[in-house]
Image (cartoon, rainbow, N blue to C red; front, side, top):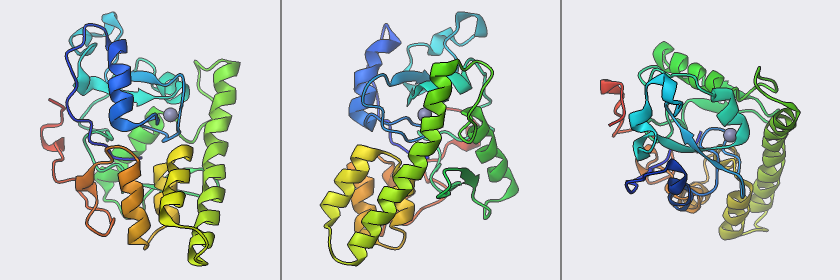
Length: 236
Ligand SMILES: [Zn+2]
């Protein structure tokens, strides 16, 4: 899950007005599953916007926004999450905690300590990244969920092909990263180019506002994120 630097938004009277600012800042990618969603991406509320649930004061608050696809949004639904026990891509180093398998499944990095592994699992379950069904999904969303899974497999095929071409000296870094940006799935491309600093640094650059403090000068992961605010278990 790509960690991002969201920066500061404006004051909004309607959260929908934040969508273009979020896309400008983060690119049109789902913040949870990393899919590229050129149209129909939605402003995702980390804490739910439903007036009955007690977070109305965060309804139009930038700190409470991410971008989400229809599957991640509806899997998360109106769940009230404990910010202290989940990982968030605009706050934590969410890159290091997941392993993206070529089969399409997303696994917890086995090297994590128990506490971090537990938080990573909760976030994975929150948006049902490995599932193709959820109680509130209709047929349209189910179809989209199957796509979400199979798109990861497809991204791996593309990224591996690009890696092979790169190793043979047949394709340049700019073209590889342009293809990655148009495909989405930052983490899969980063995994496919493990150990190739020049490509990883360019991937970090072309996916807008990938959190720079989560990676070192060679594109290797820095964890925990230096600005990690988990200590106070909350977002400002
Ligand atoms: Zn998504």
